[in-house]
Image (tube, rainbow, N blue to C red):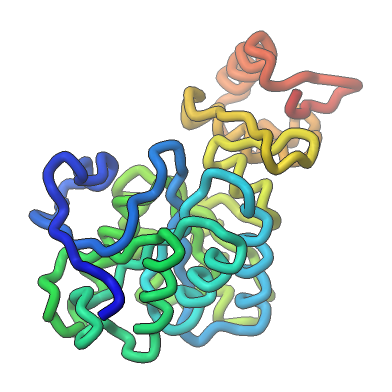
Length: 288
């Protein structure tokens, strides 16, 4: 085996994960934690992905290169492994949470043992609540999904059918008060049915890497990948406004998208303009 498995100490336990009501009693890991300043983005999707889903996943992760973002996924076949490999390609930290123990003799799926070793070698992490020699079972995958959602700041669903295990992770993310994002797709594709349902339920639609950065409170400035603006001190409603302002919007359009009472949104916009976050020019509101 190319890596050592360590039981996590209380002082190492991820703060976000300790907040969820069904937090694991113990955790095992191999590799290195994400830097403290990083935002953890959980990416999940269908095992039976489409060429569109693969292209979108790879493009969005490429857009995140150079930013303080760690990619969390489940090491599974399909979108999970595509996300891990894209993160490795673009030198982003990545965390794999399999539905098994971390020993190479039981790691699931068997075809991804080498990928797991590459993740550790690159400075990423393998993470599991299961004992080293625990073999994956049908119930262990939904159980590990709560760790993926709980440890992350946000969850991005790439593709999923209506009846999909992927949607378990998005539901858990909502329960844990995490941001849920998803990718719009073709109305003719079964793989887009899950994302379109999530959008109807309030998930943030994502069309580019900047949409993700905005939702995470990281705003690129002037196209410089070494420069970003941190909006983590904003309220959830203010972050939502920032997420929508990927391009200038009319005030009425912004009010319709937010869906809160007009007077509340106008008050928030005034405060955000005073803070220097937004500016209104010629009837259009944009990020400053």
